[in-house]
Image (cartoon, rainbow, N blue to C red; front, side):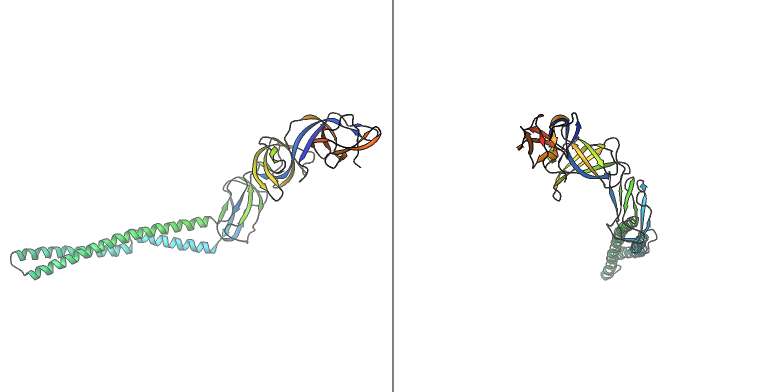
Length: 362
């Protein structure tokens, strides 16, 4: 990390030079916290495969603009084609089994009709023998045989009707299951055609035609085509000074002598232990950098308003809080109280005055 405190200075009075050193000078200071970071597009997302197969078509390249739901990649999957055909065959068969021309139901219905006809005959025969028996025109054994035949046929008829109903219900369940499998297979087939979620710009493509793609493989990186933001890293020693809404001044090496203005929009409370920093996001106000993904930037987050203070050159500081001064023709080392600083200047809060003569450290 670079020094945490950067001060943007506008000179009001030039440093007064003595015979062998400089005198502290009043300057106008704006205190800020240094941060480094990168530029990223808004609404960033990655195109991820939901099926396996060989990449048959790549319809976009890096830098292309895409619309919402635009087709980007097409996969070819022999296994998926086979699964879909099998699922469709099963679905059509189960649909036919429950239809008006169902051979399964037709056979069962024919059996029910046949038994019903026999039941009607056995019922009539039983009633006839019962009447004859009451008239003493037949034996009890004959009546019982007729009654048994009728009861047997009636039970057979009820059983076959129940079997027909069970078969109908089972065929309906089979049809629902087959339809679900068919729909899933169709969805898997659509998963071989990968589209964009939102309109934006393609920043990177990871697969080429002919590459084998596994489920959850990343194929491309897409982000907003026009809106970018700065993702900054702030040293933990300065994190407590950062507040939403603070002004941010941002510079990038690709834009010489140009400063972009932004505002702190989001502060993340999790410490990055790798570099002991916290993440801070800033939205640009007015002009913004072009949408180059990952563009490196440096920033000053303004934490204190502009104020007039006494300053000395930073190169004159010995250690952390001492300077050499000339008093009555003699050189001696003294301590002073310092405040904000940048690469060039240090704020003097005590120990020196505008009449002090500060000598170079070497």
